[in-house]
Picture 1 (cartoon, helix red, strand yellow):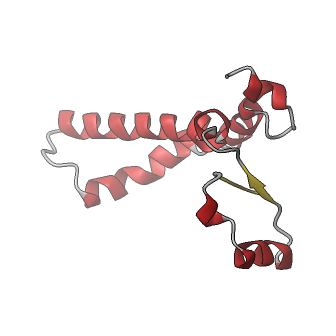
Picture 2 (cartoon, helix red, strand yellow):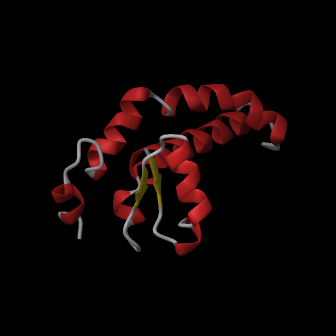
Length: 110
């Protein structure tokens, strides 16, 4: 399954053919609903941003004046371990009502 927003530019014949050829189920979110139904936005990216902010703060406390690409890469593994957990991702899909399919979850947010 591939979840994508409702922007018309994503829905082309080539895209649908590619999905069909590769046994991918495209799931188009209704327009103007991604803030409610996009699982990664709802439960994954916010904690990721939070951990990134904490890494910057730790670096500053440790006397590193600039959080550049090198510092980012040095912290990336820990940030990912803290946030990109299977349990978190599954929770995100449940919280949006996508898996298991439960439209009432999203409708209750409107």
